[in-house]
Each structure stands twice: as C-alpha cells, then as structure tokens.
Image (cartoon, rainbow, N blue to C red; front, side, top):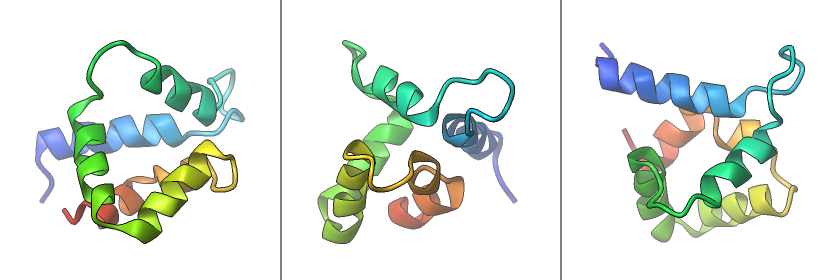
Length: 88
C-alpha cells in the first residue's frame, strides 16, 4: 500500500513526464530544465535520484542521455523507472 507521500511523489513524477499533447502542457524537457536552473537545492526526490545514480553507471549514462536528448524525458522519469533506480 502506498503512503500519501509516495502518491504525491508519483504524481509529481507523472506530471513532469507528461507529453505536450495534453492540451497546452509544457514539454517535459522544458519542465526538467526549469527545475535544474533554480538557485536552490533540488527537491528531495531529485536528491534521492542523484544519490542512486552516483553508484549506477548505466543509469547515470541514461540520465546524461536525457540531457543530450537521446533518452526521452518521459521514459527516464516514469515513476516505475525512478522507483527501480532508487530501489524503493
């Protein structure tokens, strides 16, 4: 059973991974870039992702693929993929 916090995290990841076909929503890469350019620490869920990537060269390469636009943002940030990487 998922906790409310887990559900909120899932909703946040899903919102970030939606495509632009959803009626005027921002493109996923735009949302991701906006998050990276804030002058504040990344959200807790992104910190957990970065910690998990530190020891996972394969997924780190895929993360850099998101930045290089060779891995789809929605695919990488899909809640199932994030849970798999973080190990929760």
